[in-house]
Image (tube, rainbow, N blue to C red; front, side, top):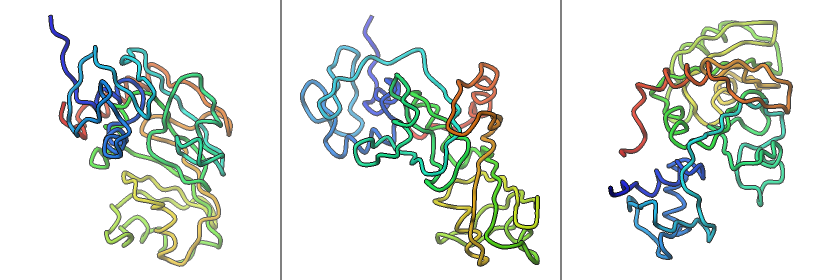
Length: 243
């Protein structure tokens, strides 16, 4: 029986090397070779092909994926570029297998972030149209006044668009909780700046069904129950790419 062919970006994501989107960038840069030749986008590979990224041989796809919940401290950068960024998340965790973060949490924010070597689930979770909730606690540089909370939840013009309506709840004189289903660049900070506030601290306390329950700088494996629920939540998610 012939081994089914896979698109090179899917092969790399299932091998736990990177997400399909990142794989496409590597292919565009000419960093990927199949049997010693640089492939075109969408090229398909067989299990018997020799696939390398920047000269490094890529192993066969894994069946046992890793899923971590990590409490990122302030100052750690969500990048896999360990050569250019000394305060990167990969070196900080120092996990024995190659993993990469799902999404981002900016350098000056802390809180929950997932890491995995399952490229397919990365693509599903990252799609904004899937409306996956992320919950944050935000402290501002000055007391909350007027109708700031109501305006934050009603949609804010940033980055040439208007943010989706969202749940915002005041917790203290300068602190509020916000639940987003979008992932615009530095979204909460930009939303606050629109109303002349600055974020003093920002902490993500939940992603979908998973709560932040580990100490700062620590991580744990996602439970089977959590993974089953995540898979249920993303089961209707259309993939970023066709098979």
